[in-house]
Image (cartoon, rainbow, N blue to C red; front, side):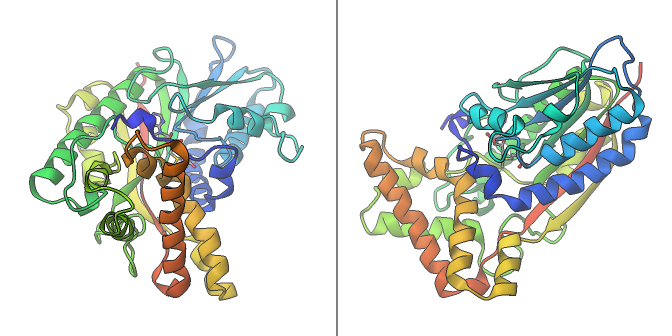
Amino acid sequence: MNASSISMKGGGYYSQNTQGAKHVIDRAGENLMAKFSELRLPAGKRPFSIVDYGAADGGTSLDLVSQIVHEIRQQSLEQEITVTYTDLPHNDFSSLFRMINAESDGSATYAQAYSNVFVSGVGTSFYQQLVASASVDIGFSATAMHWLSALPGTITDHVHAVGAVGDEWQTFRNFALHDWETILLHRAKELAPGAILVMANFCIDEEGQYLGNTGGANMFDTFNLLWRDLAEAGVITETEYQATAFPQFYKTKDEFCAPLTDPASPVSRSGLCLEQAYTGLTKCPYRAEFEREGDPAAFADAYVPTLRSWSETVFMNGLDKSRPIDERRQIVDEFYQNYNTLVRKAPEHHAMDYVHTYMVVTKARD
Ligand SMILES: C[S@@+](CC[C@H](N)C(=O)[O-])C[C@H]1O[C@@H](n2cnc3c(N)ncnc32)[C@H](O)[C@@H]1O
């Protein structure tokens, strides 16, 4: 599978259904704002440039971008600011621009509230250089860089690399480490001297925890089980089961840091310096709501859509293209309906806690 064909569900669905992602961005934003005083404004030489890599519909980072723009305006009323949202070509940029222009509820965003702020989108993968060299002052990315540039191989008995073993796992890992170096080298070119790059990426933490695997049912095992059930029931074919895998890999904090801490690596030599790295868990807000309200059906109806918002295209893409699109949609609907049923039956087993490595990286001044 070409990884450029994955996408978040559009129409504003993504940010409406991913409250956890917003919490992660707010947390990463604290790291960013703590470093903000070290930044120098370009002072008329060029615009101050903020780039959000893998922005989806832009809703989850809206508060953070507003905060950055506000801080710049405290220092300068005239400083021109560009905000560039990047994502894959088929991302729902239309929803993104409606979000930034506040068409959903009419309240003003930073784009209306402040003058001399210029918003644009780039529909190109972050595995390429996306903006001009040495032009970015703040680079930011949340919950996006676990998506690989392509699917490295097959996974015989699972749908995710967390369930891969032996050579299959090693193939994913090698590919992911190479991808990570590619991401960093492109950012190294884009960042201006003294710029800050803040990232929050899904990871496997020191206790072996990762997204949806922090106790209780393992979310990726559940995906696999339910997809396997559909194969066993003859709803999907064995070939379709085998063709389905997330083009993702969760690295450890050490794997994230390695290219930045080895002074001889191309990444270190490109001028990127690691300032901070730590892992953090963000509790699943849907599970927290269930613990407050105790309503299994309401939990399942809120929780499964958040899983669906980012996983649906993987299962759609696994299905044979010769099936009419409506049939593919029906199968995927059934799959998430089965997940919903499982959650309703035993809600206490389900949660999608987020596990991230938070990193602050700077670009050396010349
Ligand atoms: C889970 S969403 C995160 C959105 C937002 N940053 C947040 O934290 O809420 C992941 C986003 O990364 C994007 N993405 C995945 N691979 C990408 C790539 N190679 N280049 C750019 N964006 C990518 C996806 O299309 C998706 O919009």
